[in-house]
Length: 353
Image (cartoon, rainbow, N blue to C red; front, side):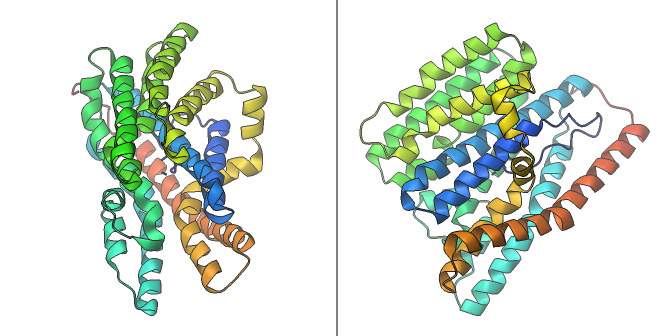
């Protein structure tokens, strides 16, 4: 997820949580369905999985940056310790349950536990870029990339905001996209597909969109952002011989950013209506669990020779729903309650970056 994989409705404790946009939940639901179907239906569907993960990355960059900017605007600072605590409470409980199931399965099968250790340390993307086999936990590469983003972005954002932040972020995204294409031509594809430096562009596009909307939510500013992003990012699609899953990342990033801008500008329209469909919104709500569990369910389907698509979808939705209602949502409600209680008892402090 990917935060794109995660729910970021819990805002800073010093302020009310931001209003949910139902269409963004639906967009998250669409993204996770693309990923699951790309793994279960047909290998030729793999580029759609890359698009799904890209949507998650853009959403993650947009939502996290929006929360950080709102906190900075309300209190004059970014409380990094509280930010890291919120991310840990949102991500770790569900991941810990999955990794526990993986440990039990691997012990019973007599296979190595090293992929579990790699996933638990959020190093899957780096390991896969180096050619390490992580088996059924390969999908945690995107979680690792986002966790690395969560670690660094709150530290970098105050400095980025000092001068021309939109242009700075988009330029960094373009460098990342171009590096991906160059490396994909010169080295084995996993190096360019999983490396943090070559997959940061989608997250950065979401960050740039959040800054652009926050600074001046007018069509002129969005037009400038779209034009600059289109000019720089689509350069990464012009190299002949780049695999489709790699070539589609840059245009998918731009398209997702423009769609998010549209959805935040108006609650209606065709996109808002389709993405606001209740089943799709619910799929978006439980998308973190869906993403976490679907490879293990797919593996079980193959081992026991169950109907792959039906078993994977039904079992994954069942487990993800239980995870959401029994673990993830109760923790979110508890954290939100604690945040509101702190807001009533502790005055917001000014100053800081």
